[in-house]
Image (spheres, rainbow, N blue to C red):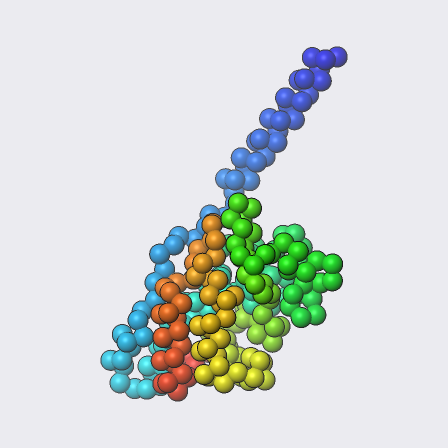
Length: 208
């Protein structure tokens, strides 16, 4: 009887190890790092102001449409996670104010900073963007118009938008996302310079 029990236990361990190996082999691989941003000054040679503004926002889109931003600007009530943009596990929802549902707030798991030993990201005000600022599934043109719309963006004018993306700690987190996550392209300083140059050139949006 003892030999049968040991054999059964060994078989179970083998099955579990085999399943874990299969999952490891089939899980999406993280996106490669090293993404860059063009300096804002490099667009100065575009003589037409609107064309220059559109080109600047197209470069800005590399950040806005990156997983570090898109994961927290979902079209549904559920955030996404990882470079592969999988639905958040465990299951959580936006809640009334973007900080999760009663009994399972974001702060239940997410602290004030990244906790790399467990792979849990963190920031002092971890939350989803307002539903009015959902970017998932939208074109860059639609995101641009949405970003400028004070009825949807928290009543921010262009100066307030630039300040938000260069000082809000949760935005800054995108360039320091913790172990196993690809940072947003470039640096936040470069991103801020692009945003300021876009605002100064008329804040034009790409077509489409």
